[in-house]
Image 1: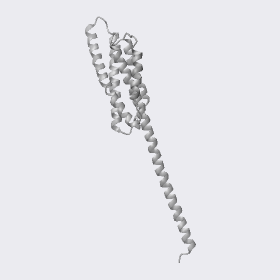
Image 2: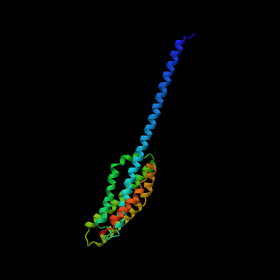
Image 3: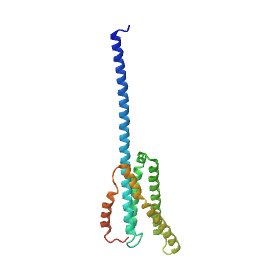
Image 4: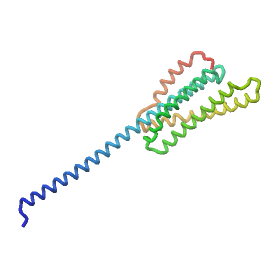
Length: 200
């Protein structure tokens, strides 16, 4: 016959063991939940950052397009504005590692592809503009060829610019915060800034 105090000791050991198991399981579940929350917070922050970078680029490209209608289509003011859009890529490059915080592979790929193509289009415009500035004024055939190349690069850039709002909307869905709402206010400010006469 088992002695009563041995049964009590066994019950105590069982209770302690079960308690330890439950505590470990609870700690594991809590840790997993905390990691998911941190991961979600990082993903939202990354989506917000990339949305803001794209917003800045979109507004700057819009400003450059408006300036093209004033004076020389690719005058110094227009080119300086395009150079400002180019600097948005510096912010993107500094934040490239945050791409991995976006859990949807398709979104990461589309965002990065859009940024690469925007850079190619913008670099094309800027590089050809530099070549035109160095070209001989007497070489009309070469100048015409370069002008056509720059026009094609610029048209490609504007086509890609039109895709930016849709990407911003997707990033807003991930971040849970509205970025495009700022576009109206910033665009209105740019309208005021650009309303002064400029020589392109």
